[in-house]
Length: 228
Image (tube, rainbow, N blue to C red):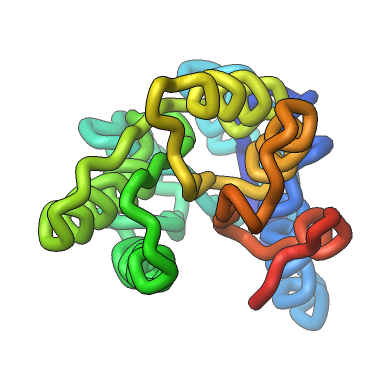
């Protein structure tokens, strides 16, 4: 054994540096591996083709004992490649390979229910990339809940970046009937949306409710800070 578990993140390195989720995710893996004298071999690439190339290099050189695969998509080619390479793999998401599943519908339903109870009827969502399985699951849950409540949400696609959060929030608040509540797929976009609302003179939470996904330190340090 080489004592290493491989993790390839196919995303711009500039986003990784400000994304609280993956920092906490990697720390959690390290916390579990360290008592077993294992470590994480982290590689950041731009897209899935480079990720697959990294898996092939690791397998040919015997650099890792196993792989953690994240952000599965529909018709994802990566699980088949990893099976072909005989690299033991755990997928974070739904997969035919061993996987760790997360309830995406439940938190969306809970957040939506709270917003509806507050009286919101103009609700928007700023998503991550639409191709990701968890993005689709969250969108489906929001659409189902809104349909049941007789509400038609506005859904726009972001890329988890600060720039997307600010730009999309500004566009949403510029609509003829702007939303009174916005749900964001990550904390970076949510905090950028908070700043955008402030620059437009829209008071949070008096005029606009914002919901972020991860409840990271980033949100708890914002003003107004997040509430659990």
